[in-house]
Image 1 (cartoon, rainbow, N blue to C red):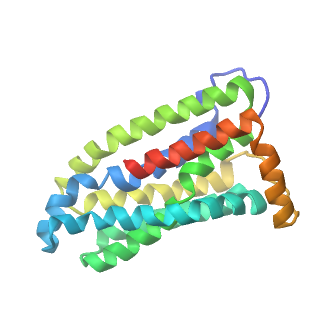
Image 2: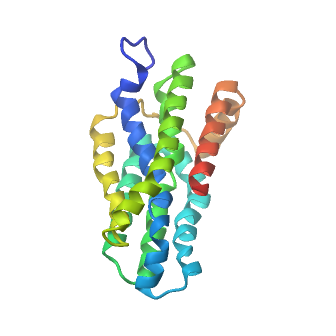
Length: 230
């Protein structure tokens, strides 16, 4: 937690679990774009229609991310993050078994609902775990992992696509064991709040005016935008 450490921060098991969430968050788009031309041929649909798989995936996050952030503050991080990872993994991985485009769109929408909180909650949990220089270092490491994921997934997706256009869709299944690891292994302080919603909003406004909290909030927003644009 927020204490002196004897080993490098990037070896902290808690931070490594957050890396798993980050890699899951950026997986939903960049890993499947290489298969779009082959998918269009196999499913006999126009190439431009395949882009709907990105639209329906990113759309839920626009509306759900703020709501889930509030619920994570009121109910606890794990109660939001773990189900989100499970939904992301199950709905996303199920796409690999589907050959109907409309059903693919429905599953991608569900996967997007799971993805909605991932990019923001990982940064929030980093703020729960670390402070001061450790917070800045942890955010930097997490940004590096995000960049590695966004750079690597297109190549991974392309390699898997040589086996069949649907193989990259199996990658989200990785989020399921990540969810179990978060549930049983993440040592993160959970909010213990029984306050009313109005009181909560007042406290949020007071807190966000501090520089450290504002920077953490800004980092969360930027991370979410980066994920949407991949």
